[in-house]
Length: 367
Length: 79
Image (cartoon, rainbow over all chains, first blue to last red; front, side, top):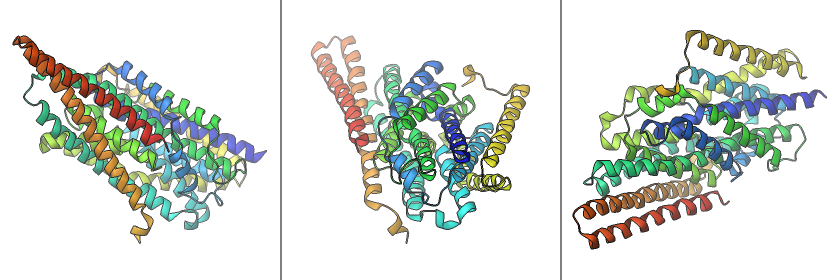
């Protein structure tokens, strides 16, 4: 009975994480379309939510990586997964409150690795998977998106540079509807799968699934729904940072950064790399800005984002480890996860209440 | 040590596929916009033949863009 309660809490927490992932990452998908005026905010977010939902059904390669290649499923328990999820959600909310587009994916992997190490030691971590499928792609992906977007925008200016700006801008705004849609689809394929992978890992740890099993359909459908709902709810603070504070974008730059981001994410999904969509699209935006004029990028803002990226894995790991320690104070049963869940919910309500008191939520019109 | 941990071939294929798809879609869509812009200019200058050619280029480039998107999604997610 106790293990069923823990599993229920883990699935609920994983779906809550997926919701915050969609909420947090909405900016990655829609910010450039909104900031260039290619789409109205509610239309862009609605379309992104639908395509995130559809994208979640396309592939399960990334889910397999998260479930089988990062931590050793044989020594993982549902409580370890739960503590990792709390680490990821906490870090997502902290960076959200500062308006920083950090990586939900790295927060998730960091949280689970941290709690696993706290529980079992370093034997719980599969070094090949963590380095080869997470850390190296984490470094390569934003640089790749930076390069592809930079190359693309250079090509665009060369091809259409002498044409009437009005026609060109209008054309790229139409193009952004497609590139933004592609990015939303790519986001759904890569990010929703991380939650599927985590729930699958918990099911394997609980003995409900055999090791190496694919996610069941209900896991895929619920992860797709949670990320789509989160996306629809939107995260205006981060949209503002991504859409206007890194560079002041024109439609062609928006198109090239979204095109580069989609290409990198879809290619990575094909090989099962659980990539940070946040890193990729922000790398693309910086590349599109720097290729036009290096000083066009607000490097101070970019520096803050990079700092948040670097902190994400260790910070989420530390919170995951701490959470695991907290749950163990209450023994190995369901009491620990129940107490931590209630405490976390109280903290989240307090955080939102404080923000509401200050009138902090950023209005849609200011994005 | 790192070399044995990193799946070099898959990573290289990801880099190549991303670069080709990302730059490719931008290039063909830019050609489409160039075609539309030239069509508008040439139509205003009353040069129907050249305008027609620009329109054909734009239409073909738009088709190519759509093809790149569809093929890209199918190939990259079809594992």
